[in-house]
Length: 125
Image 1 (tube, rainbow, N blue to C red):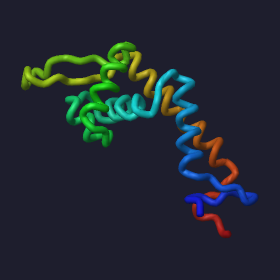
Image 2 (cartoon, rainbow, N blue to C red; image 1 turned 180 degrees about the horizontal axis):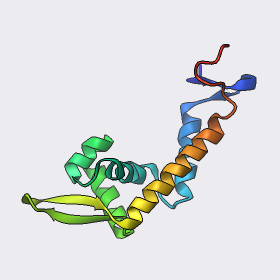
Image 3 (cartoon, one colour; image 1 turned 30 degrees about the horizontal axis):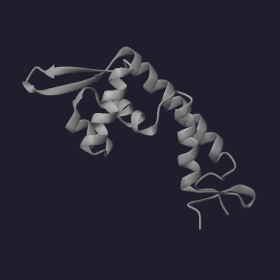
Image 4 (spheres, helix red, strand yellow; image 1 turned 120 degrees about the vertical axis):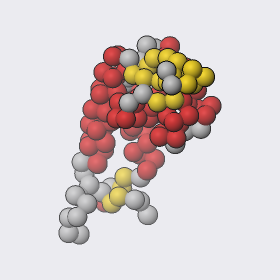
């Protein structure tokens, strides 16, 4: 059984939603593992890599890989933590804030398109 029953007998599966999200992210030449830290930084602000990983539910190596890639693209900035110079704080660059906003819009559009055939959550059957 699907997690959402669509109109006209169509079912929307988690895999369909994940695939649609991946295609939306691909339009930005990025992936979901890029979006999570960008969105977290946009929502909550600068964070250490460890804190960012906890916010995103991503393990340490995944955060390091994503941050390295995002920094290489000029979307995030690393700086020493003024309170503890042993730590590095990750923050959004201006381009990263713009990209996070564009990716959120794309994600919303892709999900709305995918879920359009489905009845509203509280609609009578």
